[in-house]
Image 1 (cartoon, rainbow, N blue to C red):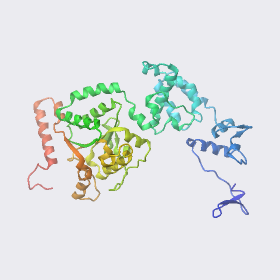
Image 2: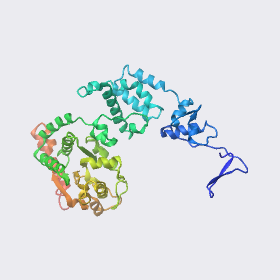
Image 3: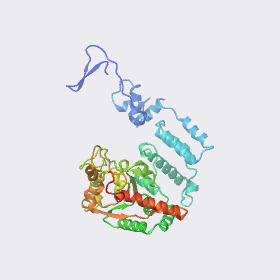
Image 4: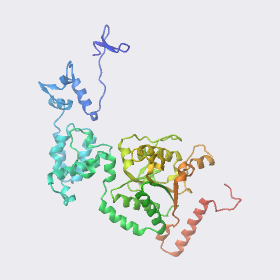
Length: 432
């Protein structure tokens, strides 16, 4: 086209070239784009097509998609080498390892017809189905297939992908976890409820009196209809992380969703399936008093937030108050369709538990003074008026100390550290 015609931008039409010449160039299209990639391959081969149907026509046969036309013209290999690789690996690898191999092949965009490879190798990828779900098997072949597809769906979810992204691949239907096309919900619901129930019973038996009060208060709020906002105030060693684990196990054993987030990446590693708050709620890096989270209505993340029962936010004092207010405005907007009272409730009526210690790191304000830091803290937000403060004061780390002398020494040191944070240590002449 560029050799014989010129595109006139003002008239918005092609006109015959009068002088000179040009060499046409087609833009690069990555293989992962699907039909666009196959269309580009055909345009480099088919001469003078006048319609898309003519591009898909090969030797008088009209194909339904560009990929099949590429395959008929020999532009796509039969992918037998990938089948042979899986068959060879099956002699020493487990079914879970073979599923990870198949996941790698899918995410690397090297498979042109993944459904044909799946039809050949699915018995190898699903060999452990009978062992893991022997009690639930009714139709062995169908259930084994569904099990393998579900396990692949879980693996692809870590790459923010789904089997639905590959049009010809089958998707799981029989499993209750796969009824939703939301990959985030699928990930949050993939827990062994029986195992979590046993762990929960053991954890509840180990709770102290203070921790049990926090546990009962939060569980009661989740069971209610209006939710609640709580702040668990306790210094290091009082067992806040253990309370988070107990609350998560209690609700997840009941097939409910708990979102564990933290203000820092290191703190999120201590929580079960923890994420940073910015990553989970799509909070902007630069926030102000009018900011909202980058979550659109109808998205997978919006559906996950709507269906969650509890949000636990650890190390909350180190986050700017505008981050909490942005999430509050976003959740009120997302939940207004489920309950008309949600726009008037903090966080849309969801139960939110914040945790941390104001003696530790507060929000970092570049070139800011004391008043700027205090004004950016969560207790300076309008949300603090709706917040119920729960305290943990018992230092559980002292219980692991062997002798009484060591316990007394550590207790004195812990009290001295706490007094520094409260501003009670030192004399009136001590320098700031």
